[in-house]
Image 1 (cartoon, rainbow, N blue to C red):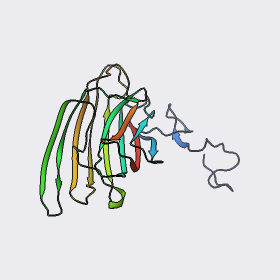
Image 2 (image 1 turned 90 degrees about the horizontal axis):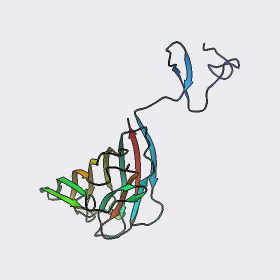
Image 3 (image 1 turned 120 degrees about the vertical axis):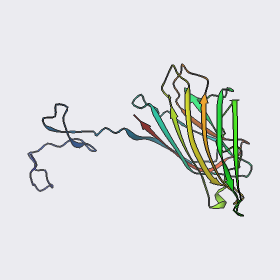
Image 4 (image 1 turned 135 degrees about the vertical axis):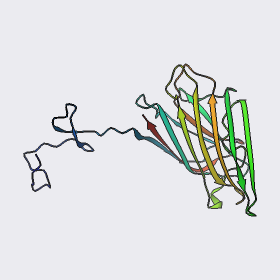
Length: 219
């Protein structure tokens, strides 16, 4: 039972759990116990910018506890103009460069003159996912940044292709237009191997000047 003591609601005669644990009902539903509260949506890791590089990986965070993974990329900028971000799936820590990415994007861009143009792009046998369809990413000097959400399915499967979809938005490095995209991609390779993560890279080899990537697992 709970009791008032000098340390708060617990007195010296009551045992405590470990740091980070909470009080919960036990499996038999007949008593309370300390334990870790399970969640169906958990942050698994984070990768942050540390030096100027033309690519970075979010890899090694997938666990068998989860079937679906969310990747959030934000505060991403490139150091030089003429670069946009592409994505590849990793297997065993290395990106797959085969021409087996089937992708479609839909979106458009809005200019400072309030003119909106819709654009679509697609490719059945690409060697990467191109979520922004070629519009160059912003630079840190523009007070803007690139943000993207990717949801990855079948990552741990050893019998099925991996599938991902998501969206991206950012202000072009020239300060206009504003670009947004939704995209869908099926990777028609490595059905027999679990995916270990994602690699993000620039099309022309330009360096990133900032980025932050977070990954969450979904049961």
